[in-house]
Image 1 (cartoon, rainbow, N blue to C red):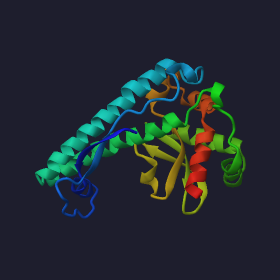
Image 2 (cartoon, rainbow, N blue to C red; image 1 turned 180 degrees about the horizontal axis):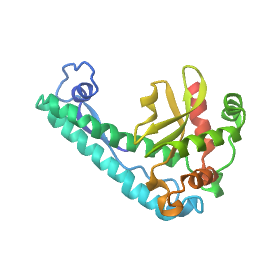
Image 3 (spheres, one colour; image 1 turned 135 degrees about the horizontal axis):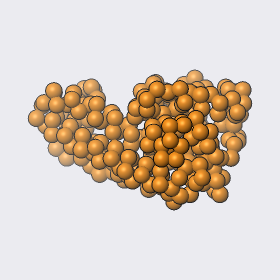
Image 4 (cartoon, helix red, strand yellow; image 1 turned 180 degrees about the vertical axis):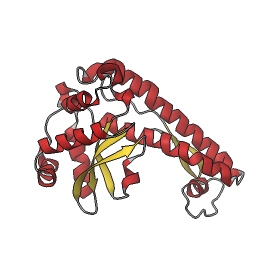
Length: 233
């Protein structure tokens, strides 16, 4: 992910509630983000996800989260420089929402893969064994994630999470663009499925369960397995 320097570490610490320490003027740490490229064409996930949905989702929705997050960071930098605590507090919602949108979607794109490149193949190796141990079977995991994703009110995400301390898998949901870390600092996202309507409405209308049933055809389990093994290495 391309990054460029923006604001001081003092600003970041202040915004996150940490103890700000004096820093030299040249010490810069808070960074803006850029929209990541996809490793596949917009239409490569069809028929599970249409090319038009992928184009709008990536080029419009994710791009908007990136732009608004960067704008909020710039405003935060200015607010901290002015010692405007009210402005800093006011900006936290925009930073969480748009920063979370960027984090979540950056994971989501990696969780998808065209069928011709192995998308939809069942998980193998250590992750496959862990799924069997913690859920009973791969089919049971899919059923649980589909059920929790369909039942999520409003907009949000359904996750396959690894608790790196307990070394156990779990299914979690988050509202809006809250990243998984908001449910627990030890939770690592292996797989995240976007259940905002913008992820499926043009193709599936309001039938979210159909979208959830079909997205498994293009899930990149190789990526999820690599994350799993790297965390536990």
